[in-house]
Image 1 (cartoon, rainbow, N blue to C red):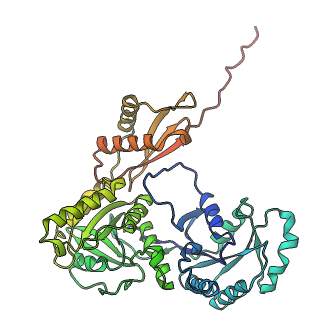
Image 2: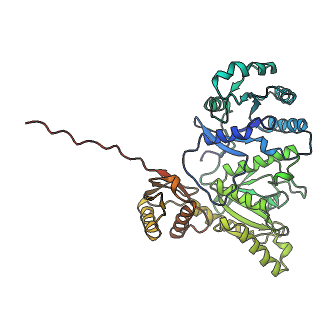
Length: 457
């Protein structure tokens, strides 16, 4: 038996608007990035990220990105978001503004946190110089807290200390359950009411999930193991992912985050689209989330039974989908009906084929030969009068096949040239249904050694 899938702790960043939550989020996320990993055509406006520090991993949530309803009084909105953060998160970070000092909203939030019993770190931002600590921090002890941590998100001061404290207070890593060897983990993602639970029920052949016409029925991820043809599949049904402007109910806001965090646990994402409504911008963002996480993606156009009698409409829908997901043209698109079972029998063979490509390994000599051929056929552009040099390539991981290319200047490689290399490798390696991950690294130069001095006769 292999180890079960991991459920990463959720760390929520809360506080009044304009105290620097997004800046701190970006600073904490950036602290652990070391490899250039450009992903063309993918959304960058997310408000959650996986962070690894001191060999511990957690999901960091910027709740400032969830403040979507400008019609509500700000105090009510802050308290609403804080209550839900307390309910869902394993650890809370309350960010306060060292320059503005304490405001009534801060007292209200602290009162909610104090009653929760959850572990809270109280952070005072905008302390841009250690000499300001003695002047700016004392007023915050009026909140009745034992300690506050000064930091500057803008200048990076105190960030390492904060990450040390977070990882020390994280709950033990939760292994949800033991999985059979080589279990294929499949997550169903998509907007609410697109038919995710119905599809999982159809795949299972029994009513394991609650199916309802009410959007948002599935509040959290629900996992079910299925054995079929000697293979094991972990099916993860998730809450729907709505556009930010439609995420108003506080519990639904964090359901979005729980759904997205399911991408951390799956190998393959089934992204459902409503055939009747057609593809939306939010659907393409969900696909972008999957690609950003390096997951294999299948685009399923569900409720195909509703358009089965209209060939012209069918053609229009498929052309619309192809145009919208041009940045993920390798992802298979398949028509299904969870209600009638149309297209469902072909789904598992398709999952198996995609997963086989997702798990491929390639010998290093073959990869280097392909790299040499690609660079010879289409040399990289000159950068400031100097030629980019691609030295060698090696595979460092599977699921997805992850290839590291060593070059003399990773930051100078244009995104267009990296796309060219990715397409060449996909074509030559037979990866027509997934996107291999290409990473760029600087080749370390070996220090020159002087020849030994001759001995005098």
